[in-house]
Length: 97
Image 1 (tube, helix red, strand yellow):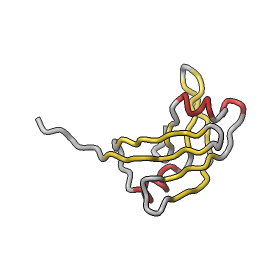
Image 2 (cartoon, one colour; image 1 turned 30 degrees about the vertical axis):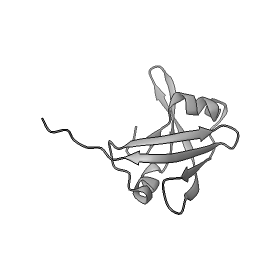
Image 3 (tube, rainbow, N blue to C red; image 1 turned 90 degrees about the horizontal axis):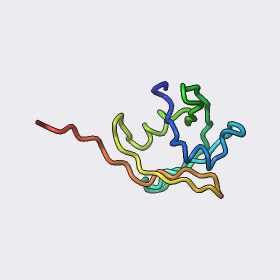
């Protein structure tokens, strides 16, 4: 996976029916005030166990939303509207031992 792509969980890929064809998905950053919404493309990547799907240009809205590598992103996917909504971002905290 390139660092500019966000791999989608298999369940989201199935609900978006990306196995039938790549398409654009609407992304909503609900944790922003005001909410930010944009359209983003998808891409397919071959893995040993089959295809995985990713959002392209993920780095652009990581910057908009202040998301850093290893942060936890809570999101939902509305199958009817085909919208991926980022609900919460939890910053990664390195544990001190």
